[in-house]
Length: 501
Image: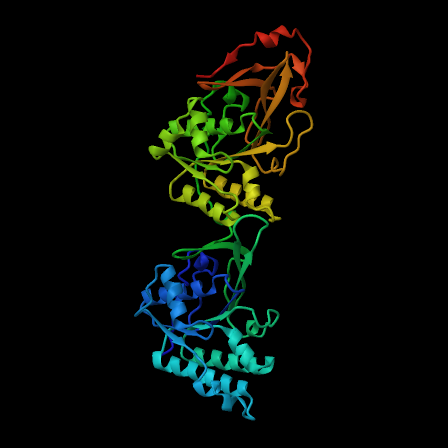
């Protein structure tokens, strides 16, 4: 087979991985795919060969660790038929090396086995003359070599041999022999490392990292991935600076006059708003008010619900005049129930991007950030995840709303994660006690994009949604939960509420 002189990358056949690799694998080079057993090496390797078959290239899978039938069964579990697409060659020890008399020979058995194994690998290559090769796995060759120097010489010989024929090679290593042995890393053109993490609760988390890629830029850091029926899906780490969209920034109304007045006229498109307060104050309802207003304007919106079951959400909001179920059936509102124990941060970010990019959603609600935090309890970079996601959404012209439940009900309350400095607007909800009743108050404590009222307003929920009262000028201490009246207390009892409809 003549060496191919082409700059076109060899696709891995894995969603998202080619993006991380800036297009795929450089043809005619040897790459290392390493990871502990069960991390997905065989699945990615089969995807690599099947992608080559779709491009009209010949593929050869050389297996030293699995039988050919096991390999075919694994492919079938993903719905893949590899017959006629991939040549599978199983390297089994020759019968003479299994003979008892042979084992008593003065010759060292590993010398015979390694030489015979390499010979059979080269014979298979000469017979098939493939464009793409997978060698599974290096652990068996390392064991047969019985030493680092001999092992390095064998890998170096194989690399030169494959390079002369212009083949793109994927070497698999399950790290079972010596995880600290970096012999192959210095010889190959690139290294892809797969990892599996086991959180204290929930499903396993998988991630990968490109450790090396000679002469080629790539997306660094860790990237989450999953293995499902149909193969591997990789979720490239989001870099917000790479995604910019030109749009005309407009002011978005909430649909309630009093709330718009509190916000200085509304919320700016392409900004982020944090709704903060203790449990039960109505954070979700406030955020949904903006979502529903966007749908009524003819826009598309998406809700990611971490905390509330959808049936309960539909019933509760219908009593407030929000028919979310009808909006979803009409296609103007996308609703996703998110299971924090089953979802990685990378996959969640990928879902958000899909809704904005492919469906054209311009209003996004994440309810709540507490649930988002639960999806990554062992992650130290939650703030960075949120920062990149908010920056991406802002640059796409999407208006984002997030809710956060604070610990406590009145007095000194704590926030599990402080992102108030990231959000463009912060709406604060509070309980307060007055005249023997528990009441609710709302205020805007931050708005980057313009002026806003500094007052505090009482609000209530009814069958027509949210209704806001006039600014509460006659007492102080509302935000602490126990106000002190500075005027006649009867003013509060007689205060009228403006529903804004």
